[in-house]
Amino acid sequence: MYSRSGTLLLALIFLLCGCQWLPSREKRTQKLVDQELAAINWNEVDQFPLFEACDESVSKEEQRQCFEKTLLMHFSMTLQDFEFQTEQSLKDTLFIDFMIDNQGTITILEMEENAAIRNENPEFEGIVSRSLKSLPRIQPALKRGIPVATQFRIPLVIRTDE
Image (cartoon, rainbow, N blue to C red; front, side, top):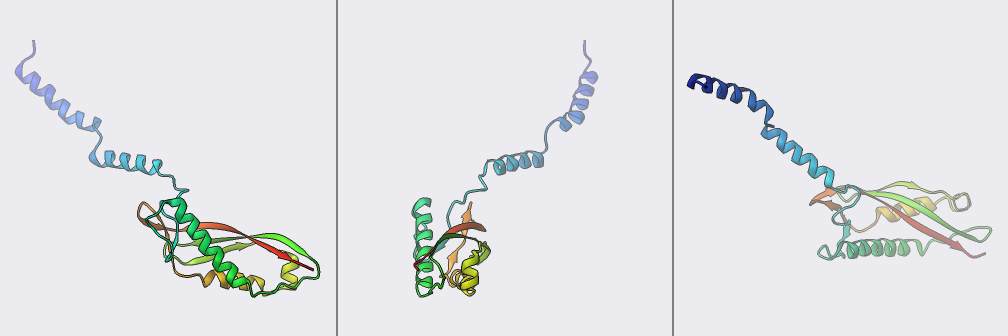
C-alpha cells in the first residue's frame, strides 16, 4: 500500500499546489466588494438634497416634496416681480437642468431657450440663473451616507397675456 514517506510526499505536494486553488483573502474581499457595488442602484439617492426647512428624518418621498416645494416657492418669489414683455401672448414651458454637487453648490447645466423670450427679455436668463444661485443653503444628497452630486430638471411655465 502506501508508505509513510509517500503519504507525507503526497500531503506536501497537495499543500504546495492546493493553495493556488483556494482564492486569496484579497480576491475574496474584492469579489464581495464587486458584488455589493453591482447591487447598488446608482440612479437613486438615499436622501434628497435638503434645505434647512426640510426634515431629514422623514421618508424619501417627503424629502423630495419638501425640496421641490422650497425650490418652486423660491423661484416664484424671485420671478413674481419680473415683468415679461412680449408683443404677443406667450404660453410655453422651458426646462432648466441643474446640478447640486457633493458640497451643496448649485450649477446650471442647461436652460432651454425660447427665441421670443430671449429677444424681448434678454435679462430673463440672468434672472433665472441668479434665482437658482440665491437659493438658501442646500445639504447635498446622500448615497450610503456619502454626499453625492445630483442632477435635476425643472419645468418653468411661462404665460403672458397680450
